[in-house]
Image 1 (spheres, rainbow, N blue to C red):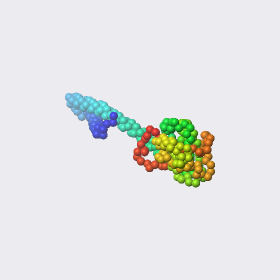
Image 2: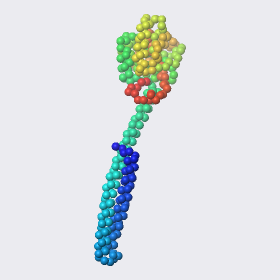
Image 3: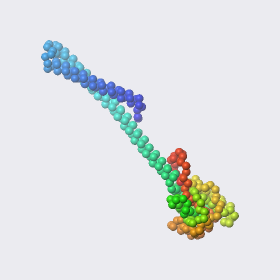
Length: 287
């Protein structure tokens, strides 16, 4: 237990007093030795009676001085031990605080990297999304990424997220296909994830059902990754590009054309405005 500052000061003051007791006792021992020397080895005292008295007095002084020295050494040792133990406790607490501060610094660095770095879904987040999308087996969904949308780092980040989303859709039995779009007439500046259906005229066969499925996709994705909250009702992005769409993921080549009624566009990550609450550690990373 670390002692209060007032108690530490009191111990230091007491220690200083006992150190002075030791110095004084040493002086008393010195005086006793001088008295013994005068009584035994000099002729300053003539009578035997006076010599005897001086010798006895010097012996008493010597004993008192030695007792004072011993007592002061014991008390100085005790008080010093208490102060040293207190310093050791302070050093231990300081070490713990430094370790905690270092851990907090690392957590803040990791949190900032999560906030401003590339997006990545954890296994737990992917499982949550998959759990929300059960019952969509066989539904066609196209996943698009514009080749020109921000920087090359933005494209790579969007591509990686698109591949992760495709993997989740594949896991629940969705007939997914991932497409890279290039030389498009109006790629715009697509941000985050946008879920859409191909127009509002029912050309897909069942616009109402498609809209419900798109809304389910938005509800499943929103808690785990930045997603636009409304269903995008415009023609498929593939129709706006001069070059044919190419596969996003070479490891899972597409086996059909980009003709799904429902589409997901993965755009660049929108960097948020940093707040104090965002820096608080969370159990799960949310890109």
